[in-house]
Image (tube, rainbow, N blue to C red; front, side):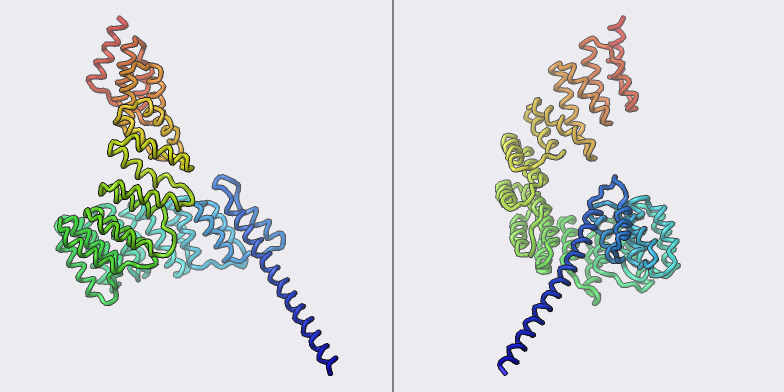
Length: 507
């Protein structure tokens, strides 16, 4: 009996060990497969926009006997989109369509329209949209195309497209109407917004929160409407049983009161908006913080800043930039410095845009020494100056007439122009040129203004500086005239007088 029990126990132990071993093998196999797919995803995501196509990698993967489901390919496409590799994302989507087992779903059509717009433009996206055969695909894809028209401010095309959507019976929710209202607001066609609302009512499409907010904004901006019209829309929203009035609508109303000079009403509405804020999302907190700053309500700014810390998740750099900008606007540099130090002690990666807010405040207050000290501190912390850093410092140096430092900062700023769309303010560019003229630094002035010309930033004021210097040095001005001609700069009477003096010099 004892032996029988012992044997049974041994069999159970062996069975448990074998089962555990099988489970471990299965788990290892799944982990290995997951790891391989992750590696494939990482390899494709690592392709740079200018490098070879990821399709070879996908085909090699399949040729090696591996499988890829449409959901995995869609995930790869979304990863590429997040890293702004739109051309590769579109290639993966097209490759997926060519696989026999693949059937596109409505979301695929919507994604493809977005990618075609980013890669080729609206015309090609229009052609693709019209080629979609099933109504579900068209229903999913029309909104990205309409948003493309809105982004490019194409009023006529957007209106024509809306007419087509009506004909196809696709306009059944508030989203396309909201896009049209965004377009009219962006192009200052405020009177067209109420017409969109009327059309929604005729077609029995209910307004959502965004619809009411856009409508209120149009009433606030448009001539002949004003705060009374905004209040009327807000009351209509309150009476709509299908819509819940949230912080965004109250903030829109408060903004209208503020612009109308009714600060007390604005503050009261913002306090009501605070009660509607989410404990899961910080967006509303910083929207209202900005309005409190505009109303010069520092107490409200600081109260909401502290309240925002209770929201889950990390406070990001954009949030810190917002609070610092508001405090600087209110003139509380000491409080801004305290919060900057708080950010700096917790930041994982140094974002120079945060320190730029404080740097700009120092320069505007004439505290150039503090600005220089902060600049050196950010460099020690691993911060990398951007074009705005240099612009702020140049402005400070020019104000304090520390022109040698301004020239060095301008050189560094100009070196960044090939990688961004920023252009230095003409006043600062001219201030350096005039300083070089005053010092009689003929060679560097020529080099400096030639660089400015090559960057497409030449102006008549700059060229007149150089003409005067050449006249004083008794040097011919032919290359200056060539730059003036290339930039298509129209000369004034003073310029002609300087050129006439050159003629007298030659004679």
